[in-house]
Image (cartoon, rainbow, N blue to C red; front, side):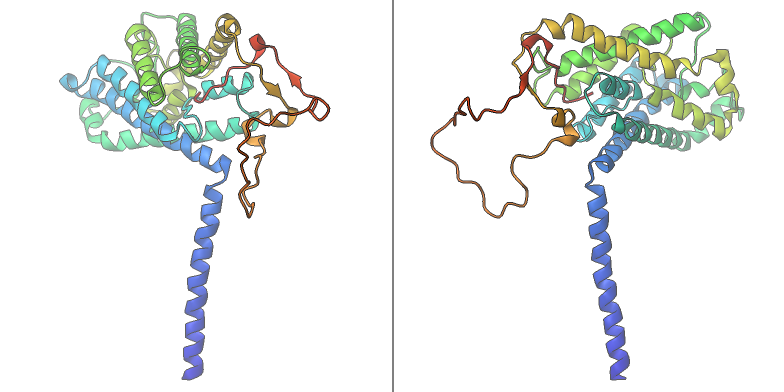
Length: 342
């Protein structure tokens, strides 16, 4: 009996030890930079899309409960909540076109691009599924049980944008290029510390107001998708949820909200850097090849130092010209703009 009791106790002890070990491993995985940024983009995009698509559902299904202004407010403040949720972790892009522009202009490493986009797409897809479940009975009652893409009882527009009858395909393409360019242009201005940025702590609200302004002024023609992560995953969800292949065939529109925002965001970023960024006198910055991207930065002090350094009362410490390292300095006008978000 004593020997069997010892075995049972040892088994229980090993289980108790293995459980904290598994938790520790999970915590270590969750603290990895790529994982944190993936989860941040996933959650921020999910929050934005739930509020945004929910407001569209009210406009399409709810009659007096919804309006086009309500859609703009839903997406605008949905973006605000997303920035609050993930702004200091991933930058809260919530938009594959903005992520592409940041990579193309050297704001972040290309290896992060698929991580960000995957998180955005999954968050957007899950948000579409959430809205479908919440409003399923209203969708069926409104449509009479027929899930259609076009016509007076169409409900696919709850989830993705569709070209209206008064517009043509290429006019819609140019419209998406323009509105996405305006988005990126203003985002660079809002977050440029060397210009006149939004006050610290107000960036999320200002960015949300920007979305609302774009919606009420430029949103009528195409629904201002401005975002492949906002349009393509919900469209794919409607394809598998019962609306069928017509969600991709309707006026051959599906590819425009995917391609046009990439072009528009890149052009908007270039225009800001050329016409505004290059005209601002900036402090010279020291460039080092090993510190091109934020994820390659090496801390000055090791995190495992047993004793903290002793600070001297004499500041600053000068470096003699003999021991000064040879580094290249960038002229003030060519210094890149450092952005916290987007």
